[in-house]
Amino acid sequence: MANLTLTVNGTTHTVETDPATPLLFVLRNQLGLIGAKLGCGLEQCGTCAVLVDGEPVLSCVRAVSEFENNEVQTVEGLRKNGAPNAVQQAFIDNGAAQCGYCTSGLVVAATALLARNKKPDQAEIDSALEGHLCRCGSHVRILKAITTLIGEGASSDS
Image (cartoon, rainbow, N blue to C red; front, side, top):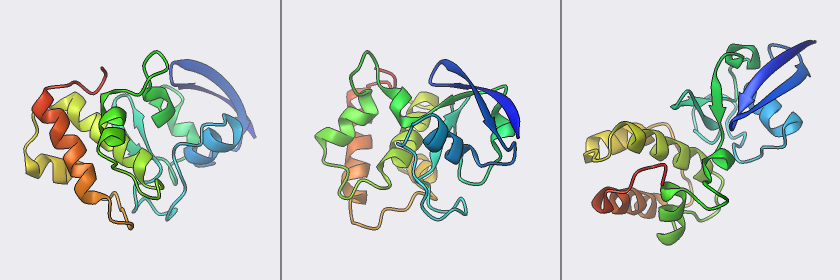
């Protein structure tokens, strides 16, 4: 066991844990941030995605000790002044969730994409969502939410 210092959603936390514990388990079990989910446990489904220094990272396997000097942002941390960010709102407006299990990972991926490129083409959208599995059929609405944002020229942080 070790004391590790993590910056998550702009707040510094000291956690006592085995340094090899996957980041996801520390986020959920010690910090109470349950937006990222455990799906496959093999970094293949995307439900555990978080932003690390602005880039999407799958957190179900990677050791928490890898993230001590990084800014981690979970789907909960994307909210601005208590309201959904533009990507979250577009997902809500377009009904881009059915069971909702994959939604946080997809929101994280879309947020990272739109932060890098305000007007991605379809190939860039497909690439950003690759590895994020949605089994209940919301994919068309997810794509519509993203393309709606692109058409509006909204930034991922508004």
